[in-house]
Amino acid sequence: MTDSKRPLDGLRVIELGQLIAGPFCGQLLGDFGAEVIKVEAPGLPDPARGWGAVKKDDIGLFWPIIGRNKKSLTLNLRVEEGQAILRDLVKTADVLVENFRPGTLERWGIGPDVLHEINPRLVITRVSGYGQTGPESHKAGYASVGEAKGGLRYLIGEPDRLPARAGVSLGDTMTGTFAALGTMMALFAREKSGKGQVVDAAIYETVMAFMESLIPEYALMGHTRERSGPILPRIAPSGVYPCSDGMVIIGANQDSLFRRLSAMCGTKWSDDARYATHDARGENQLELDEMISNWTKQRTMADVLATCEENGIPCGPVNRAKEMLEDAHIAARNAIIRVAHPVLGDVPMQGVFPKLSDTPGGVEETSPSLSEHTESILAGLGYSADQQAALRAQGVI
Image (cartoon, one colour):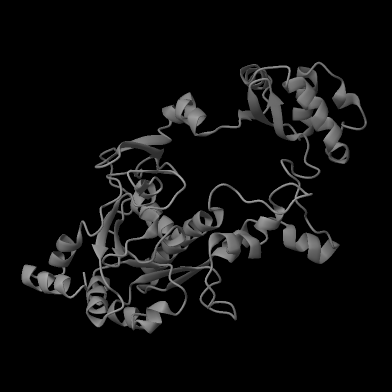
């Protein structure tokens, strides 16, 4: 950590909800200095604390990342006493992030109208599968469903198989990122208007935002994009190529780059009318990729990477976690950091991105234990030790 002031220092964020989309928004805000108070139900912690195919000591290994830089407050929002505490907390907050099914806060009597009466400057960021309005807004929505509705899932995988999925919850993290972006825009607007507003981030809409020209391609030209495996149709060469000891990505689809690639491989491909232009390479993509693969698989990854670098051709390894942990460039940029955890020890995890030159983000501490900060937060709101004891006895905190 540097001594520089972080850009969101002094910002108080209340995080309601669980799993990934909403909490990822909270993580991003916390990474840049916001005080993020994560609210969980007493005895019913966020399932993300224990989720994941790989665990250590019953702790899900995503939890130290998505829970980092946060404080844990236990609060039963289904009872009036818990709702009253949340109202008190809202008086002190700048942002409230929630990813419940739409209508949940309203049923509990703590919807945006109520919260804005308490604190007109509050930015309320609502993350859901389908958005807060529309005929499907009431539906439960996970990332997988949003990825399918937004067009992404149909495009992933081989053309002769059922659609595949990425190995991470893209829809959730993409939406959490958009939610954080929307939150910052609402805070910027508040500087001019003095008023908070509602940020409505839907998973399927976030996915749609990444779909490039997919919609006008069909609407204007009747073209439906299909699954294409490891390539982008008619963009060549730009794909995965096997080496004797692994795989690399080579991107040389521009004419000047392709000429250098052709010379590098000792060929006259760039003089051949079938490959000389971008459109021609697109027409003959499969055979071109096969020829390049025949060249790369006779060489090691290190040889291909070095040769491409010498010739100014974009090329990179297809990394797994092992390779990322050993990567000198990743290490030099502090892209993987180690954060102390009371149970797990030093946990390597991705750092804070993007990097700001004067007010960088950082990780002060890893994820909190359940209810770790309840007493201090409530004391800051004026609740005495006796009041807290009574609330705990009632199951409110």
